[in-house]
Length: 276
Image (tube, rainbow, N blue to C red):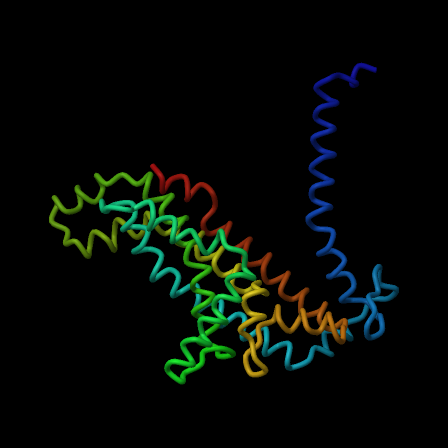
């Protein structure tokens, strides 16, 4: 058999490995999406579905939709604040010269390196201390959760913007200044467009981290303020309802759509061109 060559065997093994990898990654999502269209009873998963139905989509509880809205608003606000903090921090790290720069860089990376459970416990105790001293308790409040989410999302923006800045040709800014552009105009028309791919990449990671966070939100949530991961965790633990699979499917579809739009608008080519 002439086709049974070493090159063809390596190619077949590579394809098989890729298929197994995709099954490992996408298999759980297929189960969730498929079971959301099933007719299983409360507390059970119908997969593969015996019949196609949308009953669980019409049975989505308002509480779950409010939780999704809370997560979307929290993640959006976290991204905005993370960008406002992360971009200047990255520019300061790359372009400034000061003592202990390595220590500052390590501190900015620390939220990513710490376990999320530790971060949640630390913020919970910190809010209790602040509350005992001032009488203003952030525990269980939306603002308290926002501060914690900004803490863990900012490093993603800092890292992505730093990676772009380290390969940025500063002669472009110098040329703009020599030609008469003001410092603000140079930043707006030269620097920020080059940094845009890094900012968008970091903001995307920050949004996903904030939206999907469970450990930190679980410690800081209350009956009035609950994110969707917290509601999902509690519902799965106490009273599983297949309508949760319907909500999860909507989030999966929305996430894939956002990813495709982001890839279409930005793409790897744009990121590579920004580094030249």
